[in-house]
Length: 280
Length: 344
Image (cartoon, rainbow over all chains, first blue to last red; front, side, top):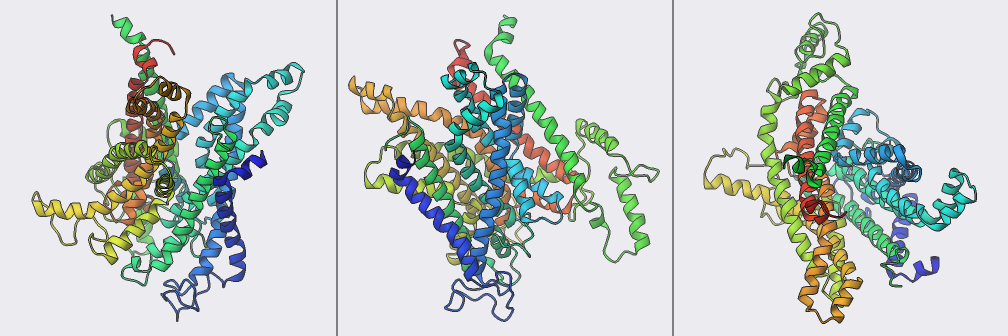
């Protein structure tokens, strides 16, 4: 399986870019200044040798914010994506395997939540919490974004369940829980990884949007890619905040590169694991 | 005859969907009752003028809470279960209550919402329809581009569909409103402009409308195009097309077969696209200060205005549910198994 993956050009390019972004976030935030330190004598400076990406309207180093923001946004995405994937496995995976009433209820529940527009729901939920930490926001995003993943996993379990080796396991007297853990899950691992990575990217995108309108983690103590956009939207200094291009172009660019890389990696993995698309 | 109408699979399908969406609406409305009441802070506090003494504040707050049904007439707090019954009683009578938030205080919520709704629909409906047709048309064409240019087409469609829409909005503002001053930076009309039924108001509104509309359109079109491109490529690769090719069918005929099959999954995507678009429009309205329902919703949430939140979310969820229902019916028409009632 791994050999096939390495031969897929899309997977290699996408994964390399993703790795570069992760390293940029982790190593970059160790090398740069404190992203929250004000320097009120040097505000709104365009990029220069001193501040590689300039400073924002409160005199904070944009490059430092970018590194820390990338790291924090990815962390929120990983927690939210993991949470959503876990919920999706519980709700979308157990239902079809058990069948009957459990399946009907869990499927109906998924469909009901799926009709809700996610962002308005998230805005309502976020407004309940007064002091939003990064972890809380991540959990909220995970709570609202699982239905899509649950559907994917449900359809996968439905097809796996009909395969012969599951029948053999059942006939040989294996317990249900053991079948799920030792027979179904290993066969779904690649699929679950794709679901997790896509959930992660959706969570990163959602967090930035939520933070931009001021409903993400508290922007005065947490730096994320979205909080950088929030400070531009709520700029106190510039008459036209849109002139501060060095403050909002970089975080959006990182987001775009990240999302495109996830999409390309996912397509590469799909082409390897899905026999009908397999070309390599 | 009547019996056949009721037992026809199409009627059954529509009936089942209607019951499903009614359940969704009930759960959604219960959420809209409950969630605002879990939010911190008191919604009537912002209606008390600053500088009021503590005694006056308490008195005024009690009066306001009575007015908005948060307190019984005798001054005791009204239990949530009674408020919930009032909520449904008022809703079924078509009474959405009065707004609490600054700038709209004591105005009927229905009046404010109806005033803002056309601005949001003016964005959502054209973007949904034009994006769907243009995106799928471009995607179906893009599947036939070969060689070096095919990679370029792939990357453009992936980037436009994956790019964060709110950031793209900021970039559009920066490029087209600040650097090249073609469009205004925000608002629905120019400041100090009195709109009326004349050509100047129309042009002024159109200039303000252009940027939010283009932003949403480019993002949704990119999404449809990249989906349609890969679906068409997938269909072009399948057995029936290869077989048709060997039988000597014209390419045009084969393309029409492939596209007809590729468009079906796109139709199921319309539901999810509508739900996403409603959320996207909300944030886009905020970036461009477009005076629609989305901006009002955000302001209502930030002001914790119970009745305004009910009004805006009621309409948002109504639009979403009605749109989903329409898409489901359209899909049933397209799927011959449901339409004719044979097979399946």
